Amino acid sequence: MFGWSPFHSLRARLIASYAFVIFLSLFLAGSAFIYLLRTYQTEARLNQFAGLVTPIAGQVWTLERQGSTPAQMSDLLREQATEMKVRILLLDSSQRVVVDTAEDSSLTNQEVSLPPKQDEHFRGSVRSGLYTTSAGQRIRVLWLPPPSRPRSPALDRLIPRSPQLSVALAVQPDDLATAWLELAPHLAGAALTSLVISTAVALFISRSITRPISQVTVAAEAMARGNYDHRIPAAGADEVGRLAATFNAMARDVGNSHRMLRDFLANVSHDLRTPLTSIQGFSQAMLEGTIQTSEEYKQAAQIINDDSARMRHLVEDLLYLSKIESGQVNMERRKLDLADLLRSCTRRFAWQAEQSNIRLNVDITSAAEVEGDGHYLEQVFANLLDNALRHTPVDGEVTVRAWMDQPPTVDGWAPELPRLDAPRVVYVAVQNSGSHIAPQDLSRIFERFFQVDRSRSKTASGSGLGLAIVREIVQSHRGAVAARSQAEKGTEFLVMLPAPGPSPQQRRSYISWQT
Ligand SMILES: Nc1ncnc2c1ncn2[C@@H]1O[C@H](COP(=O)(O)OP(=O)(O)OP(=O)(O)O)[C@@H](O)[C@H]1O
Ligand SMILES: [Mg+2]
Image (cartoon, rainbow, N blue to C red):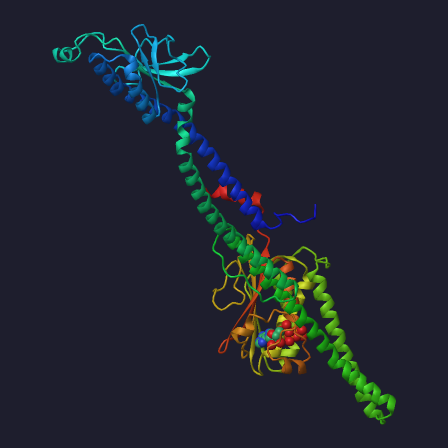
């Protein structure tokens, strides 16, 4: 089963199936052609023989008129028979064979029953019929009966009395049946030519089918070796082309997630190593006695405490993020008014805003009802407000707005605003003045650990996980989040959440009421 097989490759199997189909169609077409040709060739050969009878008979009658006996005509007839490759029978008036040009002259003196009627196939008066010899051999006889009486005075002058002799050709039925064989070499030649041409076409087609597949195989092997940048050249819009395009998309996604995983590990280890180094350094100094005064001890303990708090914060954020991502968090689905939630959340940041003299505006005109988990949604807005306040310069402004149904203008959002599959949508925008994120960074800020200016953010103790958490929570509420930033207007984050609308039943009655 696993041994060597000539059909081990797809290409070999394709070529074999093409060859089989070509052979089968040639065989069927050839058989049909030969069948039709056989009948046609048989009739053509019969006509050819029939055409020979008349001149021979004319000659015989002329000789007869001149007084030649059948024995005298015999040599001439034999000569003609050899020349024309036919068997000539000379018959007397009682239809007895007087000359048979066959080598054994087996029909001489035999009475041949001649066809009584004219064969409808022949023009002229040649008659054709089958005759069984005394030896049991079946032959076809083509006979031209002597004219019964002269038909015109001119003929009367030529043939003064009705001829007594008549001529027949004896044809072996096999000779007729195998007439088509004359064409066999031509047929074989045509079959061979078409076989060669169609095999060449089959080779070409099988190559064009298998080449992209082997390209996919090479690319898959490259991917297995860890090379995610290998791409398959575009191969049209057919199934193979789509396979190549899908493979390329898959290779890109796998490459991206592989890169993200690598970056993630690098970021985690980097973010843990920095505080760990400082913790180890200060604790070692304490042990070795480098730190002596109680004031220095206090400072070192403070640093160790801050750094371990930062590490704990990072680990907690990571655990939190992976829990939400893997769907382990049970989020409540309760109706809640976002207006209330936003007001209470903003109040928590009032003190922080005051410290930097930042104006914190809340602009909520209507009730914004959503179905979700208040605890997690509060974290979303707390993260956004924390970011906004940290990136707003002194004397700047932060505005929180919430409204329903009216989508904002579409320009500038990264990622593009999706259409939520919900009867109504609640929009919450957190906007701050004075900060600008460049477009190339804007498309990445929701990635884990991404920080626009990592070195500066470090001092502010951020880890770059806040917006990734925001996105995960919003998405698990079947919502979406996007950002846009302009140098003069500042930065704005938009959260879209599906709002519970009227139930399908209510909607139906509403529609029927309207119409
Ligand atoms: N309102 C804003 N204005 C300008 N840049 C912002 C704003 N909000 C976020 N960013 C940029 O996006 C980056 C990612 O934000 P994110 O909240 O994910 O991380 P972080 O605030 O640095 O750390 P963490 O929130 O985990 O403590 C920030 O480092 C900052 O560069
Ligand atoms: Mg943040």
